[in-house]
Structure formats: C-alpha cells, structure tokens
Image 1 (cartoon, rainbow, N blue to C red):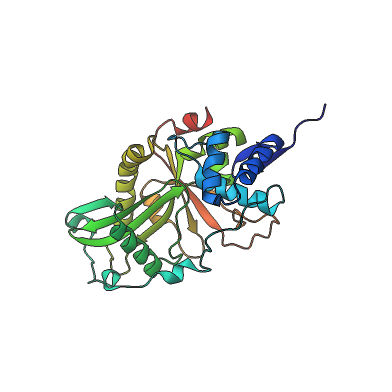
Image 2: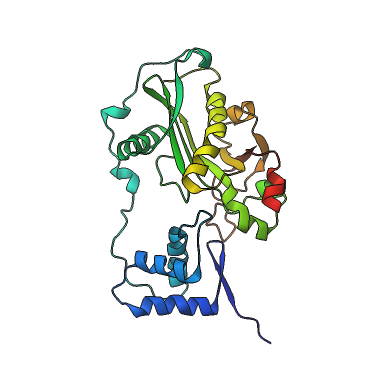
Length: 292
C-alpha cells in the first residue's frame, strides 16, 4: 500500500488531497484575491490560531511556497511590496534626540510600560526603532505586542515581542520537547525581538528593570488580546555586538549559541552572525506544559 504524499509548509503538513482542495478553491473564482483565498483555505482546512482566529498570514506564506514549488497556481498579486519598506519611514521631531538622562533607575520618576495600541503610537514606535536600533524596523511576525517605556511623559525605551523562532537547537534541547510537541506548543513561547534603550538614556540597572517589568506585564496583556498566556520568553543576542549582560542581570538563562544559519538557510551556508540564546520562564512548570 502506497502512503499518501505529505508536503510540509509553515509548520503544517498538507496531504495531496488538501493541495487539490486549495487548487480547486483558486480555480473556482479567477478574480478572487490571494487574501480572500487564504482566508477561505483556512476555514476549509480548519487552520486556526490558538485563540480561534484564522492562521491567515501563515497560510499565505505556505501557498506562496506551494506556488513556487509548482503545486498550485496562484492568481497574480494585486499589490507589490516596496523593495525596502524601511526607507518609507521618515524621521520627525517626535523622535529627535532628547536631553541626556543619567540618573540611576531608582531615581527615575513614574516608570510606566505602555502598550502600543493607537496608529500614532505605532508610527512613533516604528520610527524610534528604525532610527536608533541597529536592526531597524521590520514588521514583527505572528502574534505580537509592542511597548513604550516612559519616565514621566518621556519615552526612554521600547520593546517588541513576536512569534518564536521555529527551530533553535539550544532552546529545543533545553526544553526537551519533541518536534511534534514543538509544533503544538510553539505559540506558548514568545520572542523578545526588539529591545531599545534610547541612546541619550544612560541609567544604571534600567535595562534589567525593564525586562523585569515586561515579564510581569506581558502575560496578562497577551491573555487579554490572544486568550492564552505564554509560558516562556526567548531572545537572541548578537555575539559581536553585545554580551547580554542585562538579560543575565534580569535572571534570564543562557542556553547556547545559534549556528548563524537563519530560518531560510537550506544549504547550510551559515552566513549570518551567531547569537546567544537567552530564555526566561514565565511559569515554574514551563517544561511540563511545553512537553505535555
């Protein structure tokens, strides 16, 4: 008996029959957009997020790769993405350098971590990150939360959290989960993708204080927005730039170093900078929850 062929995209297995279903949905309406197709495919194949929403973006990426592999034929894209979206961000006076802040964290007044929610707050967060973070601005993947940290009315730091990396050997070995468990529970791990203290802020112990505040606030906010709580935080610290001292001071655990391959390296070229992997449990029995 011949087993049905399985195709794997974006962490999901697709059977040959499901590929045929996707192609049928595409062919039913020639003027249907890729966005509408992905939503319909999610509903038909029951591909949902943990909070019940459609895994629309993952589906769109999966279908694009199926298209590239010759399994399906997508209609032409209606919109073209600018080759460098970052270049569209213009600097304004809102993010101009401020007055130097040198007081230790204990003397900073009214520290507050505020979730980015409005369109204007989002614009300012993006602009700060693009202007002062060495990685610049990129849209965070998957479920996400962004924060601005204030002292009185002034923004002094910014954080961004998004979807965890699919495969990270040091992290996965530390957790001890199987590939199947990782596939089912990866949404319970959240990546600290951006952490920026503005250049004119030189406050002793501020970085570890911010990480401590974030570890307390993020689970509650995540539950309110996505209807579940993550159990583990991860981050990657580029070795040739930083030591990760603030993560160590905030009781994060160093678990190893990446190989510098990146998620798109299929030829083992290892051309990206190596990074230290740091983890922070949000629950005491996080390993049991992730490996159950």
